[in-house]
Length: 349
Ligand code: SAH
Image (cartoon, rainbow, N blue to C red):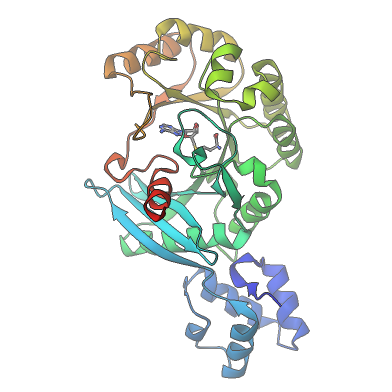
C-alpha cells in the first residue's frame, strides 16, 4: 500500500486519523504545530509525541515527500529559486521573492504544462503530471523555512510557477483551503493569487466558490488573432467568452481582477495595442500587471525596450486603468516560469 503523504492531510483529516488510532484529541494540534509552525521535515523531530506514535506515523506516512535538488540565490538577494525533486524524480520549481520587508512564494501547480503558450518555458516538454496537494504544501514549507532563515515572514503566495492551476482544479482548491487554515500556515485569502491562462469553465466554477482570493488572468494580447498565436487556449475560449467569465467572477466574488500582460518586443507592445487593451477591459474593476518578457534561451521572442514599456504603461494610465509594471526579480537565476526545470530536464537527456 502507498504511504500517506503527511503534507496532504488537512487538519480534520489528520485529527480523524489520530482519533481512529485511539489518540487523545490534542495530538492533532501537536502534529499540526510541528508541521506548520515548526516546519519540521522529519517525524522524529516531533519530540513531544510518544515514541510509539512517532514510529506508527513513520510506518504509514512519508515526510518529507519532496527534497531540495538545487537552490539559487539572485545576486541582489531578492529572489531564491528552488528546484525540488519529487519522489518519482520530477523536478518542481518554487521561488521566494522579497517584497519590501516580507516574502512572497511563487509555486508550481503542475510538472510541465499543456497549455502551449508560445513564449513560456514551462510548456516546452508538455504536461508530465499534476502536482499533489502535499507537493504544493511541501514547496511552501521549504520556502517558509528559507524566509525565516533570511529573517522575514512569508506573507503571500502566487500560483505562477510551472503549470496551469485551473487544469489541476481539485488539488489546487484543496491546497488553498489548507494554507488558509488558522492552525496551519494561516495565510489570508487576500494574499493568495491564482494565475490562469483563461480556462473559462473553471473560472466560472472558481467564482461560485466565492473565495476572496485574487484571480490573475493572463491576457497577453488585445485581439483574438494575436492571442491565438501566442496562447492556443484562445482557440477554445476566445476573448469575448473570457471577458464575460471575468465579469461574472467580479460580480460573484466582489473582487477586483488582475490582468497580466507579458510585453513581447514588436509583437504586442505598441501604444495602439495598449489602446485596444483599454477598449477590451472597458470599465471592469481590475488592475493590469505589465510583465516585460523574461528572455527564454532559444526563444525568438525578445524583451521590449524600456521606452516601449513606459509608453504602454502611460497609455493605460491615461485611459484610467490601474496599472503596474512587474519588478524584474531574479533574472540572473532564471526565475521565469519553467526555465530552471527546463534546463535540469535538458541536462538529463
Ligand atoms: N498558467 C498560468 C500561470 C503561468 S505563470 C497562466 O497562464 O497564467 C504566470 C505568468 O507569467 C503568466 O502570465 C505567464 O504567461 C507569464 N510568463 C510565462 N513565461 C514568461 C516569460 N518568459 N516572461 C515573462 N512572463 C512569462
